Each structure stands twice: as structure tokens, then as C-alpha cells.
Amino acid sequence: MLVRKNISLDNKYLKKLQPLLDINDGNLSAAIRDTIVLTDTALKYYSSVDEAIKFLKESAVSPEDKAFIPDEEYELINKTILEWLFRHTRGRIADEELVNELINPFEVHDMKELEGHLNEISKKNHWDVRISISCEDIHNPESAQILFSNAAPNSRAFFIQLVALFLANWKRLDVENVFRKANSTQVSFKKNLSVPSHELMPGIRKHFGYLDIVCREIDDNPDFWTQLMYTYNVERYNLVTLHRSQFEVFATGVAPNPAKIVERLSKQSISEMELKDLLIVVKRMYLVTQLVKNIELSLEPGKESATIIHDFRNERVISNLVDYFSHIFIENGAKFTVFSYASMIVFRFNKEEPERGSDYYDLSEIEDPEFRENDETEDLNVGNAMN
View 1 (cartoon, helix red, strand yellow):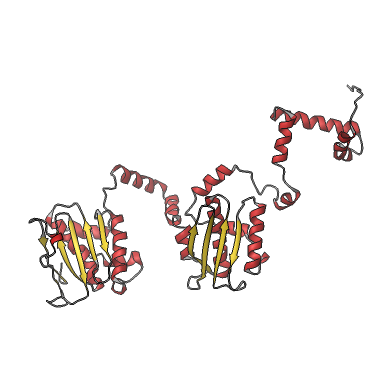
View 2 (spheres, helix red, strand yellow; view 1 turned 180 degrees about the vertical axis):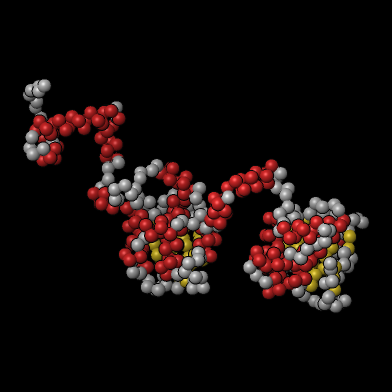
């Protein structure tokens, strides 16, 4: 049923109706019907016309942004949720497809163009990250400094990782150093041609992919790692982790030689390692195994020492522990003296030849007052012929 009404409209409202009049070929009645339908829909979700207008203004997409965002490719997401996602994916390497989606290498030809391209991407995606690139050769840089400023820390870190991955493939640049501040992050890049193009740059893994291997292992075998972490947590980490072959030898009452395992995990030959580097590797590896409670190092040149703290009480076990670590240092060719206490084993190193020959490691009595502890001190002699 049609109802005819006389209405009065100010000219400014007629101008606002003009887009609808154009759509409806100048039919005023049709334009008003469209207006009523729009208003009815808005009031179903908002308490007033003003509230609906406010929302539309705040969420409006400019024609430029609309052209940039293809249909069904992007989703709106709350910034707090996005920051949470970035925070809980830190340490994981982004897939190559993400990098390719963000930066097209065919659109940039040098580092100067890359700077403008990255700032444009940040602006269009509303990431609020500003990028400034500094390098001597914009076409084939040996090194570069990039300053990333503004944006939330985790959002900024994710954007930096994508740029680092792009530079690794595009210019063979690896991350050398990362300097983080409250509102900015400066990243130093340096050319690295020693890494094959299909492998991840070591600097990127160190600064941005430090959890990648861990997360991939958990994803591949979640039941195993969930149970393992639960067990460690319940037992308060009072568990010892050893290679199966090492455990088998230990079970016979003999100390195995861990040299090969140390070399395999450190990817270095023990005999070619500097003593300082070897001590650091030993501490890092064996604190994780929980074989000992702590390892304290002194790395002063010429006065290196390693103090191994344990809570074993059985003398044979302690003796085997001394032999176990001695194997590593003998393999390195280091000259050392070792002292054993109730809960502590001390290795002292020196570059001078022992008085009894190169095949003998003198474990003589301690003369330093700081190491005299009643009668519990036990001096041990270890030779290269240890079994």
C-alpha cells in the first residue's frame, strides 16, 4: 500500500541524497526508500544514528587503501590480539611465503628504493613503523644499518624479521647486531657469502629464530615433549640426560669418553678448540644434562680453571666423574691438575709441561689455603692410561 506524504527538505539534505538519486536515476522516492533501509539496518546494531555515523567514520577505508586491499585477502583484527600473536610467536622464523607477500623484489632495485617501499608498506598496513636505511653502496652493500622506529615492540620485531629474511635472499646480508630501545630498534647487517642460499643465516637464527627448532620439534611430537616437560617439572629437574651409549658405559661402573659427543654437539674438533672456548662449551652442555649442579669458570689467560659442583656421595661415582671430564681436557691437550672435595671437583689448567712427563697429569696436594677443607679433600691422580 502506498502512502503519500508531503515532506520539506533543506537543500543541504537534498545534496546529501544526490548519490542515491544518481543510483536511482533521479527518482526521489526510491532514494528516500534506500535511506530508510540504511537507517533501519544501522539502528539494529547501534542505539542512535549518531553512534552509527561515528562508527562508519572511524572504520572507513580510503579509496587508496581499498585499492590496496584485495577482496577476501585481509581480515580486520584487534590490535591487542595482534600484539598477543606477535609476542607468542617471537623466536620463530616466518615462512618464505610471508616474506614474498610483503616485499616484491621486482619492485625495488637498490637500498634507497627499498627504504621507500618498506615505509609505503608500513603506511598502507597501518603498522606505524618508520624505516631509515644507511649504507655506503646502495646497489651492492657490504654492510648496512637500518633503524626501525615507532610501533609496538613485538609488532616491530616481526616486521624486522621479515625485512631481515628478505635482505638475506636479496643481498646476502646477515644480521650482525641488534640494538633495542623503548621506541626503536637498530639492526646492523653484514654480507655473508659463506652460507648456502637455501640455509638460514646464522645471525637471523640467533636474533629471531632462537626458538624455531624447539617449536618445530614440539609440533612434530607434542605427546613426547609434553610428557617430558611434565616429568621434569614434577621432578624439579632432578633428572640426568645422557646419550644411550654413555649411560651403558656408566652402568658398568666405568667412566665413558664423551669427546665425540662434545664434538658432535659443538660442531668443532676438541683438539682444535681454544681452552677458553672448550670450557664455555662444557659448561653450556653439562648444565643442561643435569649431570652436575653447576660449573664455575675462571677464564683469565694462564689461570683458567673449572669448578664442578655436584651432590654425589659415592666415592666411586665421584672418581668416575673426575675421569669423565678429564677425558675431554686430555683430548684437548690441556695440561691440568684436578682436586676432588666432598661436593666439588676443581680443574686447574696451565701451559707448562708437568714435571713427570706429558703423559702424566699431576693431581698433587693443594697448597692454596682457600682449598684446604679439613680431611675431606681427596687428591686424585689421572693419567692418559685411564680406563
